[in-house]
Amino acid sequence: MRESKKIYDNLDALYQALAKATEDLIRVALAHQERFNLVLAGGNTPRGLYQRWADRPAGSLPWEKIHLYWGDERFVPHTSEESNFLMVKQTLLDNIQIPEANIHPITTGTERVEQGAAAYEKHLQAEFSEQLPRLDLILLGIGSDGHTASLFPGSPVLEEAQRWVGTSKAPREPRERITLTYPVLNNARVVYFLASGARKADAVRNACTRDLSEDACPAAFVQPKNGDLIFWLDRDAAQLLPAD
Ligand code: 6PG
Image: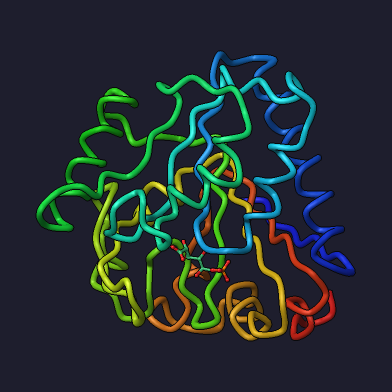
C-alpha cells in the first residue's frame, strides 16, 4: 500500500485539487480499460467535489464509461433528505449525462435492512462475476468518531471478512445503515479519504497514526493491500497530524 496526505489551506482549494486528481485518475485508467468503477462517499464533505464534477464542461468526464456505486447508505427511501443517493442525485446526477445503467444505488426499498444489504451484495456479485471487486476509486469520509462509510466503532460488521455488504447501527438517526465491508474497501486500487474541519482532526490523526484498535477508529483499518491510500485534508482537519 502506498499512502500519502495532501493538505490544503481551505476546503475550496481541496475540492479544486481533488476534482483535478480524480479526473486525471479516471483519464489514465480509461486509457487501458473500458470502464471506471467509482464508489461515492455519503455525508456532506464530498458535496463540493460532486458539484465541481457537475460544473465541468460537457464531455470533460466520460460518464458513459464511469459506473457509480455507493460506499454506504442510510436505510431510508431514496427520496429522503437523509439519503446518500438523493445527495448525489441533487449535486451530480441531475446535472450530468450518465446512462441510467451506470448508476448503482444501494437498495433501501426492502422490508428489513438486512434484505437491502443482501440485494446490493447480489447486485455487486452480478456486476463483478462473483469475484471480489477491485474498484478503481473508493471515496470515503471520516466521522469525528473515526467511522467511515457506515463502519462505526463497536459495530459487528467490522469483523466481517467474507461478505461484501453488511449492516450497522449508527449512533444517530437514521440508525439503520448498509455499508461496504473491509474486504471490498481493502481490495480497491485507490482509496481517497476526504476530511475537512477541526472537529475531524482527532479522527484524522487516529486514522493516520493507527495507534488505536479497529473498534476505536474503523477508518484506520482501511488499508488497500495492493492499492494507493490518499488523505485529502484541509489544514483544520490535519492540525493534529505529527510532523512528517
Ligand atoms: C454517511 C457517510 C459517512 C460520512 C461521515 C462524514 O452516510 O454519513 O457515508 O461515513 O462520510 O460521517 O460525514 P460528513 O462528510 O458529513 O462530515
